[in-house]
Image (cartoon, rainbow, N blue to C red; front, side):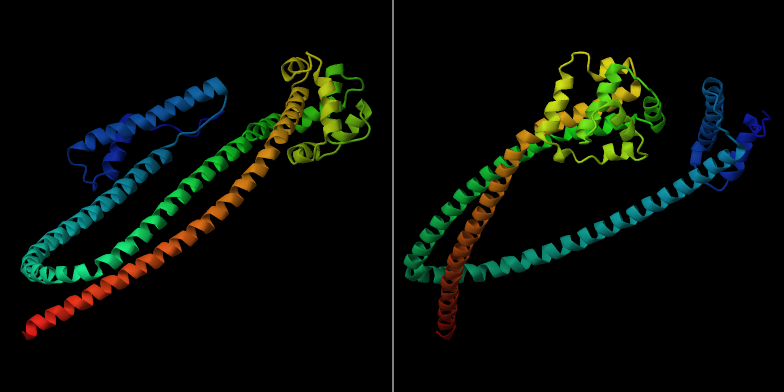
Length: 354
């Protein structure tokens, strides 16, 4: 093999970096940055040689890679410096706003101090009017307390429904590992391996059993080696396993497959010693059977989830009704407060006329 990409010597790498980084302000770190670039480029070159020696695969490290490395560094440092500059400007702007706000707060403190004297006087006058509406306020507050208690009870009920729903969803999540196991079992299967199995006129009995299990799960009538070969002749055979309708399995199909599983040697590990592809298919078979078992337990929990959601919707409607009652009571309190404000204004006006 002709080596078309001759490496640059270390001195040349340093010189090129010096030229390209000449206008970049790195302060006292320029030499260390250049040395790091040279070291990195040479390390990649050396590791690519080891890679080629050990794995017989070539990864070419060229001077163009080094130039791109320098260019990317210049771009990155420029963008980051621009970002830091923008952040600094934003920080400075924020500090100016804080200073301005502090000045305004000081002015407001003075205004508030002056207003407090006036407010204190009006408060004293209005307190006399509070006696008039105290009894009405007490009635409203009692009703509001009762409404709040009811709302808290509904919140507790809603929390319980949420917990029940989470438990049901957790039970549903138990089916996920079975699905993932099925997907993993098909990852290692190749069309060539399926073709190799199909080419056997009389396969190993365990391999034949595996294929018959797949025939049963796919609901093919001819449960035999002939039927299995016909099934695997379909160019979309692996796709049909990937898109398999696992929820459509019947109890009869699962029982038939479990009869095969009674053989202690009928496991993916044992079959792996005979055929890798057959072991992969058997993993898929086990995954489908396991999923079916989990689905039987999950279906009642799905109904429980639906019931919990119905109860949650009912509780939310009740809670909305209670909140509407609380809002009405709050409006009543606001009306009383408006009456209080009106009487206070009238009292102030009388004082001014006096």
